Length: 152
Image 1 (tube, rainbow, N blue to C red):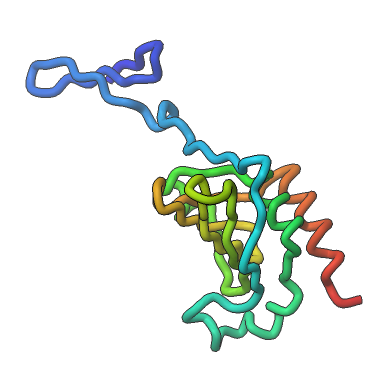
Image 2: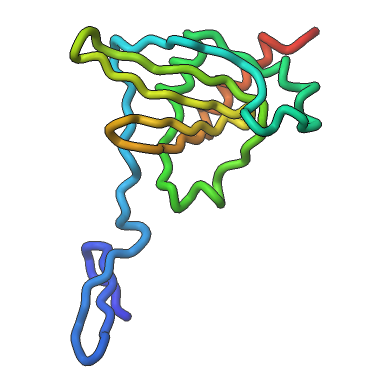
């Protein structure tokens, strides 16, 4: 197998040369939050099916305001679904809601669930399921915001 300059691998198969994309070539999913976006139906609690988890006693500490949620959604990084297993830790303590932009027939809604581990799952009726992670500067900023909500 030989690497080509375009991030493709040249693989020989049954006497033919075939170009195969490498993992590094896969473009990360695109994600942007429109400037006019707002948060609706924001709630904090336990994810459905985890209500009896031992995490429940700590979930009251994880909450985000609409403004903090927008900050998270603007700062977090989308990841390909193939990386979710290796990069995402999930606990049942969540904040859920709807990211809304536009009005009338231009209205667009994306539902989201953000775990206390700062990973998120989004469902866009057009694009389907997406995953976000909050690392580096995003994580530092969000942890500072979350500390404001922690009991003293």
